[in-house]
Length: 466
Ligand code: NDP
Image (tube, rainbow, N blue to C red; front, top):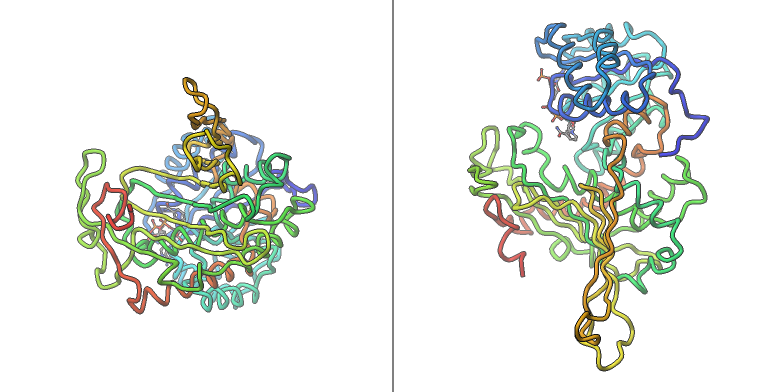
């Protein structure tokens, strides 16, 4: 993604501190993401500091960093340089004296504090930091979910603003670092053939799905408190939806881009203003995926069945502006599904009139399918049939739009280290995302929307498949 010259600090040395260095995000996504960044920009000067409560010895940390940077594609020499220059601090970040001493030890240069921590721990640390002197050269990377509802997101913003300016705060949505998602911009705004039809007159509905075959994978500690709605729809898919629906920016810079994303988020409401009509939820039971037995979600270690956490969520929103009036945008995400499905599907309205003689009447709709992984764009159009010219056939025009040079976390980390906030979620955007789903959260909490079930490895509850 283009970087504004004013923001670019790629030549300056940066200390990247990862709080939660022993966790899943760090090991599986952050370090390999950094590896892709080092592959693309080997001269970046990064000093890595890992911090967590775990008893990691320095040698194990170095091995882990080396291994994961290389996995991301960094050349061995670059990975070795960063790994051997890195250090690991064993620290309980919830102890203010320990935290204060640690923050002070970082000096006053370019520092990124990346919170790869359970969200509740992040919120508590921010309260502690608010009573400390955090230099204006520090930047904060805050993982999702940002708060647990509108009020807590607003409170967390207020705490952050006590010790950091908005420009220092990078609320992470790594979907904004995905090539296929960023490609929406070029695709939408650089193509004469799509821009004029991108509206309610021509588009019937939009579906954004992020289904995965992965089940809980031992992550009950985080997931059972979040669920699919907060983990995916509130944190990621609403922003993908905003990119699909936003107005065209005068320039792709952080103000203009994020203003317009916020603008369209502000226009979003639940479909028919009714959580019962606009949302569905379900939880997986025992099943099989790719020959492996998956236990019932509620029997997984660490799950509290009383919480009623959903592993499949669907929310439909309306966008109240003249461009999108009457068009449903359906966002869905599920775990332990039969197949991975990470795509945006834009379904166009049928032509106003199809000459008599053509079959079928009415013709199937044109669809534009944007696959996020692998990154591919497919346009489904109707053409004359091969044998009977009046028997219409669906033809697919497909193009690969990737793979991206950087993994999403490489893109995100590069922007934070450069101090370029364009891909970060601004405080008001985070609050808007919660505002949109809050009626759903409340209706689900009150038991107004049934928690359905689906066997792991299926396409969802049977009632959803009609
Ligand atoms: P994990 O539970 O795997 O890791 C949490 C980390 O936080 C561990 O290193 C843990 O250390 C550390 N930690 C917890 N409490 C403290 C404390 N008081 N002081 C110091 N360290 C502490 O969580 P994940 O890595 O999965 O998730 C972290 C964040 O990243 C969450 O907000 C999640 O939503 C987000 N995220 C995760 C993704 C993933 O795929 N994992 C994807 C996208 C976002 P210890 O083990 O020693 O307790």
